[in-house]
Amino acid sequence: MTRIAILQGHPTLGGRHFCHALAEAYAQGAAKGGHDVRLISVAELDFPLLRSKSDWENDSPPPVIEQAQQLLAWAEHFVIIYPLWLGGMPAFLKGFLEQSLRPAFMTGGAGAGASWKTVLKGKSSRIIITMGMPGLAFRWYFGAHSLKSLKRSILSLVGIGPNRHTLIGMIEGMSDAKRKAWLNSVAELGRKAR
Image (cartoon, rainbow, N blue to C red):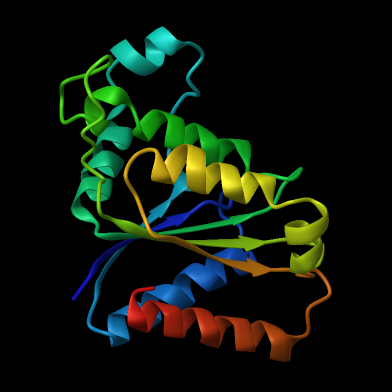
C-alpha cells in the first residue's frame, strides 16, 4: 500500500474540467489497488501569495497551508495535475507550492539557512499536464521548459524523485472515446501508484 496525495491544480473554483476527471480516475484506480489516497484541491484553499523572501523564510504559513504540509509529509507519492497556462503551471498552483515548501517545513523546523535535509526525500511523483497543443509540440518545439523546471527546480530540489510525467495534448477537441481512454490509462497509473 502506498500513501498518495493528489494535488488538483486546476485553479477554477467549483469548475468541472478534464483535470478534475483525471484526479478522480487516478484516485479510483489507486483505491482499487489498495492504496491510501488524499486529495488537495488547490482552488478550494484560501491563502495569500508570498511577496518577499522574508515572508517565505520567516512568516508562519496560514492554517490551511499547515494542513497541506501535514498531508505532504504523510504521502509517499504525489500526483500533480494541472492545465498548461501560458506555457507553465497556473499561478495559483505555483503560489501553493511556494507557500507549502517553506524552509521551516522542508528542514523539519530548522528554518532558512539550515542544510536542506528535506522531509520529502525519497518520495516520488507523477505530473499530469493537459494542454491545447499537441504534447509533442510542447515537448519538442517548446522544449517542455515548465515541466523541466517543475521537475528539476522544485521537486528534485526538495528530494522528490523519480518524477514521471504524462502529457495530454489537444484537450479541447478531444473525442469522448479518447477522453475515456486517457481516464482508463490514468486509473491504471493509480492502481500501480505510478
